[in-house]
Image (cartoon, rainbow, N blue to C red; front, side, top):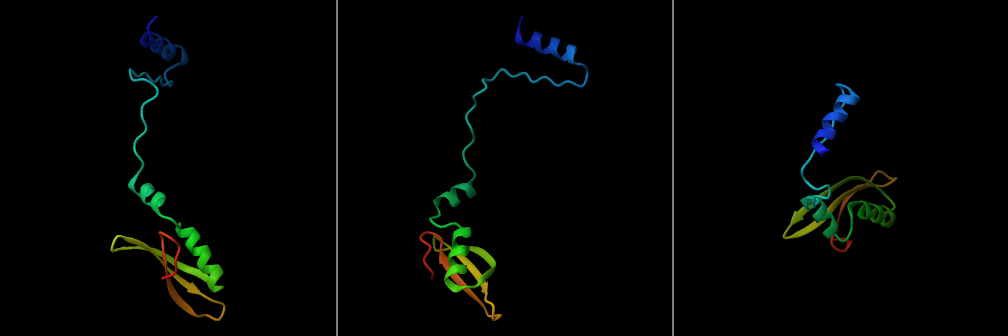
Length: 101
């Protein structure tokens, strides 16, 4: 009995609400390439999360805003910090190596 006939028979036996998938393609199709954002994240040496933790520990303050900038072929994390005294300032962290700029 062919696969198509088995699919029809299964649909009839299972009732009108059943859905039966049928495909001529092999089950192991190649997966699509990763999205560009995933490639950028994999290429970065330091993640945004790592940069935030490093800045909070180094400056004994809390990061209240974090953004990513791209300039001159370089990725930089721009972090705004707030300390217990209420002082607010901004630091930049090189995403390639974690260096404070």
